[in-house]
Length: 280
Image (tube, rainbow, N blue to C red):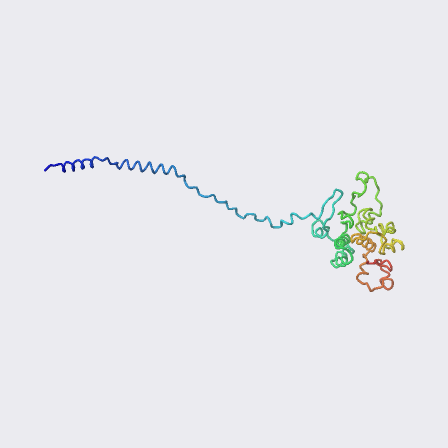
């Protein structure tokens, strides 16, 4: 039976049925739009950049070329008037060094390692190496005073005269002979080496002991009266004295107890009597 309550229920039911509902199509399009909007706002992820791998990186850079070796000073340099040997031992082990003249009996004798060891007992090592090299090579020389590297017969730049003025000069024969005997390359170098023996310079230059007069040899074979007392000056004076003898006086060094004034040794041309050097 209709009444007020039933009318209210009908009105409530009709209001409930008339509430709008979203269709599935609208919901799907909204979801898709929302998803597309979210996808557009979110940037794509980027993979991190990886460092490229280098196969055999730095391979062979240190082989034969140590870093410290690149900073070493060269053992030969040229100050402008000829090549100089800065490190004799390094030079001797290089291909720049002339090999010993084994076909020459005297050079072959001097080329022995035992001779170098004996020279090192009376001379500074660098000077002993230079003298040993000069006496065991046929034509290559290192000047003991200025370390100039040259060959016998080379026209060398003078230490005191201009190059163009020197071309007109005639070189004295003592110079080439001294280069062969001791390796001292110039007049200046010989005077420097003989500084402690000024009275014997003229007689000793380019001559051996048997070509010098007795007084000059006695002066050269003494302590000397010069004022140069450094190790280099004393060593150069000793080198000049030793190179006046054909065997550098090594016979006396090897046989210090033998009297060379008498006996079978007195007839030899290497060391004769008082011409034996004094190692002092």
